Length: 421
Ligand code: AMP
View 1: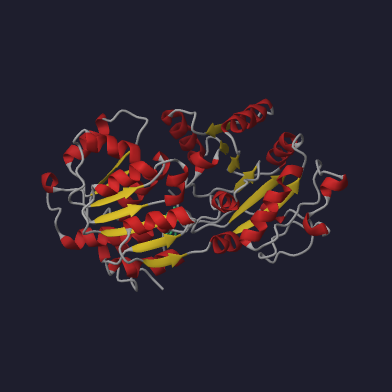
View 2: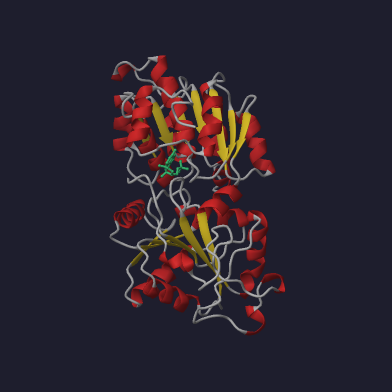
């Protein structure tokens, strides 16, 4: 299957090829025909699957073929994408710019935490596509800078995350201002009842597309777990970072305080690291992310909310310093590596209190995560008993078929990628 087989028009094909995309990902294969047919879509997929292109490409194609945006001051906002975080909003806007670079379709991005002047200037100059976080969007609507009356294409991205962040009232207010005649797309990594409920308020008669997290997890990412006491986690982390020649490591911490603590002990060990979380200013977060992407800092420590959806090509390793209590979060985290075009490695630290979390994760991904049996901080005694009373296995991925030998085959692998940003 190629993008051409999906009836994508030449200017967009050219841009996709320039991005290094040779073939569409499963979510793109499934969604693009539905969207080009102007149907509503309910997409159950996480970031990392190629979801952005799955919606951006058909929207750009419709806008291009409709030929309405011929000159700047006639441009109206005809496509609106709302997404929960600034980082995601910037990434989506960058994707529209990349995929649409030969179409003449203009987009801009708005988000809170910064002065609004540059954003309102861009809006005044005229855009076809607006990517926004909910709070700033409502704010600028209330100030009269934005009208949604010409919106024909509406995307609600990461709906479950939106609800987790308490955006439900903002979303309802935004929906109320949209024209009823429109194409709507709704994406969520998980589909609990409140999300299904919200989707019904937004979508007409949607077609459903699901890319299972198990697929993303099992096929792309080599995983391993280290049983370690809470006390020894810092030492194990320093040990791993010091002994492994890994180019870029993203470390997840459950809390903001925890993330800062990790950065402090890494710095004590002479490992340069930066943290991103909600207590950091927008500037500090962008700087930390920029330094990490450019390779200036090789270790980034993040909380789930700050890191969700962050798109870092060439990410070598994800470390779950804490295991998340929500199994889907594990899938989101390890999806930071093993992006659509890359393979990756994810290792998890698991202390006694986290055994139950590990059990839930393994149930969700329907896979046993291999245990690393050789490391200096292995927990002994009762605590060392692996799940289900089994003997620890070597840390080779069962799916990767590496088989036998020492248990840390992940150490020497580097991700591959088609695309360099
Ligand atoms: P997303 O899920 O939209 O965040 O995409 C994840 C990553 O996959 C991004 O780095 C995209 O640039 C990349 N990507 C999306 N579609 C493709 C494709 N068809 N081929 C290769 N890479 C892709």
